[in-house]
Length: 136
Image (tube, rainbow, N blue to C red):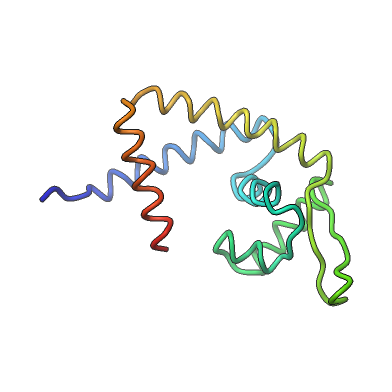
């Protein structure tokens, strides 16, 4: 039975993350900000607690991240009429524009990397990513 070469896979993942980080610099975003904004794009408005669960990080970490995004006017906070102690966050128009730019940069990196593999390999890697994501 073949074994997964975990260390080589980890190094390849880190190299891809570095390329993504460089690509995101053009849109003035860091990878955690990009991930949060991607989720907000699909969720519409969401609480900080829900975002922390989705990103699988602490609420404190997401609070710092959200504060950075609010300060940059990429995200805005909305009062929660049902619970005055909490609030919702959502992307601003500027945030949507910045996210679109970041997504185009990430797409170029992804397409470039995907071109290096045959379709079967890309499908296998996508299946592997889904399996690992599901098991976390």
